[in-house]
Amino acid sequence: MSSIFDHTLASAREALRSRKISAVELVDAHIDAIERLDGGLNSFITRTPEQARLAAKEADALLAKGEGGSLCGLPIGIKDLFATEGVRTTAASKILGNFVPPYESTVTANLKRDGAISLGKLNLDEFAMGSTNLTSAFGGVENPWKRRDSDAKLVPGGSSGGSAAAVAAGLVLGATGTDTGGSIRQPAAFCGITGIKPTYGRCSRFGTIAFASSLDQAGPMARTLQDCAILLESMAGFDPKDSTSVNRPVPHYEAALGRGVKGLKVGIPKEYRIDGLPAEIEAIWQQGINWLKEAGAEVVDISLPHTKYGLPAYYIAALAEASSNLARYDGVRFGERVSGASLDALYEATRAAGFGDEVKRRILLGTYVLSSGYYDAYYLRAQKVRTLLQRDFLKAYETVDVILAPTAPSGAFAWDEKPTDPVQVYLNDVFTVPASMAGVPALSVPAGLDGRGVPLGLQLIGRFFDEETLLAAGSVLERAASFTHRPTIHAGVSA
Image (tube, rainbow, N blue to C red):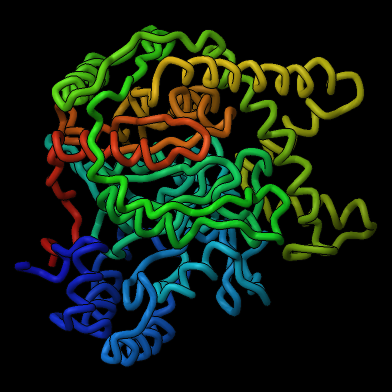
């Protein structure tokens, strides 16, 4: 191991247990890297170096005695959508700019229980609403990758762009993300890392600031599938504080990585071959098909006939729930208050100052589709489409074990190439939204680079609560792709 930044989370875990490195050394190196590099990347909103150093000393004491949890001494980052007791939690919004929770989210409590050390809170699109991480009230996040022929800033994807950028740049060994319509998978693909959206209900939503409650799901983001498996095993589990949490055992996910895919049937949905799909995306998809075939899988053409309705149905259902969830931020119960001459004026001034343009747009659209006369025409119809999408997947899984598709319709684009039409931005989620609407698990692994040197990802979608088969198939793709490229900005190479 030539550099401390060459470690994956798994290899660092072994190095800590064998006492080849100390938790203090590991944490200090990553804190130094954040101080060196994050001024440009802007992946962190809040840094917690003092708490991390104290936790590292405690971790070393436990490791010296042969104790400590599965993540003891490992430095990670927390998406700033998870409530962290005593540490500012903003959802990347001005309206929560000074909110310090008196409680801990279940996901972060589980990670702390197992010894993970948080280096701080990671940037995101405001209230997780976006696909670029440029809607944050604390400034946009820069993707650590650069095109070969340009120095332009690239978007890291969203909404978990800070998490993806920090992992890709080697500032943390892993991070939490949340996925509502692709917010783990798309930034993972854009930044050349791995991300998993578990089955809805696998990870508790307690203490996670809500965007769309029937869709939001926490998941891990890391350099490798093994690292994601280690994190997911810690994050997952039943939580009586969350009524959507499912009470079923959490498997040992790492054990699934070596299963292989011999005998598995892999579905290729014809509806994902959309008009105008770039040739590079088509080629990487075909390469993924070939890799799985060579490993012994059988490839089967399938149909998910309601796919074309997934994106519009998602943006009706998700925005309706967002309108309802964000009603609490009024300057009275929650949020920074702006005074007004009347209660209505207080509400108006508070929300006008506290919310960014994208959040306002989604609240307005969501309120509209829930309003009298439009509920049946829009929201109720979107829920019916959602049921049809779920049926499509269930029918497909009668004949196949997993589904392979691209993660996103392009690689990362430049900040100044962001479409001015919000609908064009929403189209970034065209391949990720259907799995979210159905509630099934999905993951993204880096599969190669495009012609300009930017990462491209492949997505696998699985059966309900069958993350293990996803990990087995994903591991085959990961080994075949042998993605060892590093971004331009990385803790191990940048001064």
